[in-house]
Amino acid sequence: MFWNKYNPVTASNIDTLLDKEDVTLQNLMDEEDMLQECKGQNAKLIEYLVQRSVLEELVTLIITEPPPAEVETFRFKYANLACELLTSDLQQMNDSLAVHTPLLDKLYAYTGETPPLNPLVASFFSKAFGIMVLRKSDVVSSAMASLPKGRFCLAFFFNVGGICLSVIAFQGSKLTLAR
Image 1 (cartoon, one colour):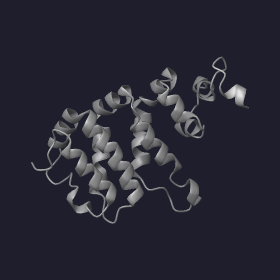
Image 2 (cartoon, one colour; image 1 turned 180 degrees about the horizontal axis):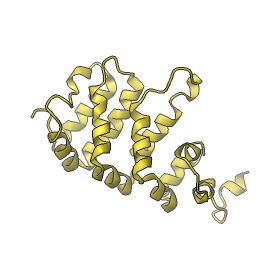
Image 3 (cartoon, helix red, strand yellow; image 1 turned 30 degrees about the vertical axis):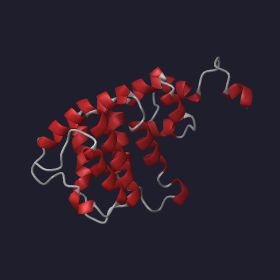
Image 4 (tube, helix red, strand yellow; image 1 turned 90 degrees about the horizontal axis):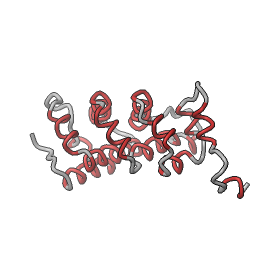
């Protein structure tokens, strides 16, 4: 109902779910107001999202193609929402992702996938990676420098539009593609 939705006195469904002990990321992602709550700086939600296990699940969602057996209209629902959450303008999210090097390695590992890449999944990777380049370029730079030579290569994927966006993000940052 309209009045219940915009009444600031009532607790959100997100807060109610977060009070439960067995809440999962998928339970939260099924709530239609999750992204708005996140952008509205819901402290309980942000505290939940910056946990390492939840961040790992979000990264996995954006770099893994969902199985084709799912209903096509909802196939990329969670991946899209995960991408929006990871790229939302939350300093805590950026900081938490930046300090967990294995999560950044997992994100970078997407560039090691064998072509052809799904263009939509590539766009999720590109958006998340581009935001990390722009907001945490020093962390991204040092993490990329520590990777074995040839492990991070975008050049093989220039035919995928989303990957080209990552290259453009490099242009606006302190990073370079050459080592």
